[in-house]
Length: 396
Ligand code: LCS
Image 1 (spheres, rainbow, N blue to C red):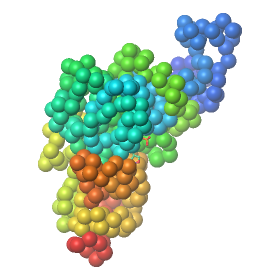
Image 2: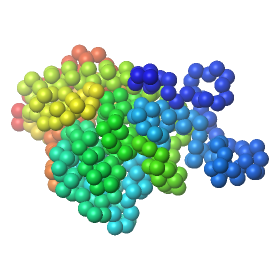
Image 3: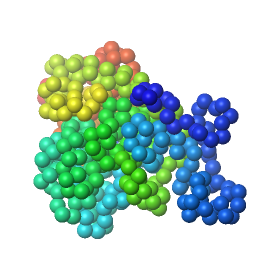
Image 4: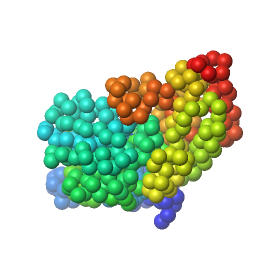
């Protein structure tokens, strides 16, 4: 099956067939055993069958199979949130006296969790600009146990060469995990480029309707799955069946939404590029983007996220955010509605200011997530909000 077909048809239930077209919600926390012997056999792993929803559930399984198939991975593990997916992967590979190499401009809490919680458990972290993969190589130490990259990165839109990172990690025998949230499997499948683990915040494009928080871990093979699954089950950051059902509903239109959103983003990037109030623009679909060639090689499209700066710096950005009428001023991304936010004071406010600037997250950076509205309405809205800088904000 091709990817748009997979999005709709993978992950159907193979049991209990009443002819249902949609996957039912198995809103049951526990499952009965026909006999004591069978209950014991299910616990021993010698007999297939559900036990308890934290350990497995048919609705959640359907979503795991859907996303794993779209990523061309072995299997998926659904989690309560994207952060539960990330911290579960950290916990599966990191411990006392181990070290992680991570992209510096990852989603703020992915970095803060390492610098605060995991540091208390004796984990050391080095954050590098992984858009030059040689920086990953230079940061690897004998105790490095995980390489974690995010590409495109939130919010700078820097791109990391997944194949180059995978070659380096493999050479040192270290697993490579990739946060694929910004691209979604429709535009990028890291396992095809040599990654071992793919992580998603399902909250974003995969669900796509700004009504669910969820996450997913997809592994390349059975051994990695077997290593991560007990960690997830014991730490308990698992998904709920109703949550899984909502995401199963959303994922079926991922290809349609992604096509429309990225078409809107390309039009918006061209518009912002020539706007007199815009001082700089980061969008991987522009040939002047520093990693345009890498993005072109490893992605099937450039996505729908744009970062930019405006005349008047932070004050100018504030004016834009306070003057939009159609764009919604809110964090998150990847929904059908277009959003605008300010990373330095919102999503990435937990990072120390110096680390933020080093990672390219300037105070003036404004981030937009393009949704599926009519592009002309979006262009008119941002144009009037940008033009408000002339009278209202900054030094313009
Ligand atoms: N990974 C990336 C790349 C993200 O952008 C986010 C959330 C997460 C992981 C965490 O996922 P969650 O636990 O929220 O499902 N990013 C957000 C953002 O940029 N604004 O609000 C949330």
